Amino acid sequence: MRYLKIALYALPFILVGYLVLCALGPTEMTVDQKITVQAPLEKVFPLVADFSKWESWSPWKKTDSTVTYTTGGNPAGTIGHQVCWISRREGNGMQEIKEIRPNEYLKIAQRFSQDPNAPVADQQWYFSGDSTHTDVRWTLKTAQEPFLVRGLIYGMGAEGILRDYYARGLDALATVAERNQRDGK
Image (cartoon, rainbow, N blue to C red):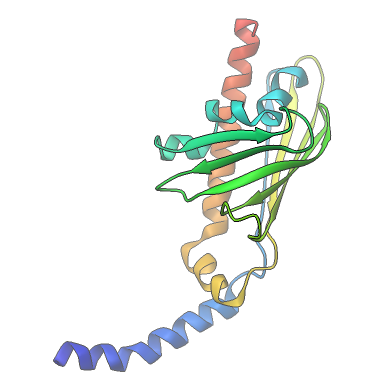
């Protein structure tokens, strides 16, 4: 009974604390990471424009080996190319190429759910370079976050976590592209 009393007294303070986190939390999240890959555009761009190749460098695959990917929609490297994933640790989601300029730019709509009505986050990929290297920039901007979700985002440090995932993903992308370049693939 004593613990129940303590819990009842603490509950309003916990709720007020969480509402403060919500007020301080971001209305939207933005992540922006860059890397220079020692491989030409033609070796790097297809690793991103073809979702079936993401398994070779995805940072999420490394944190959850049970994640499964299913590609679909239009062919790889075209508008409408899609991937859905199921992950016990990282959550489910889907993404689809919405805009493409080969070897230059990709815009990908991402949902952190497999519900087609879930809020969409925009990923944008920028590529430039020459026959020796490729500069890659990977960005994410989420839609307007609901007020009560902002406390979770702020309290968990979600932007920092995603920034770390993006940095690790770009490092792995560089490793795969550079190895493919070395091996003549």
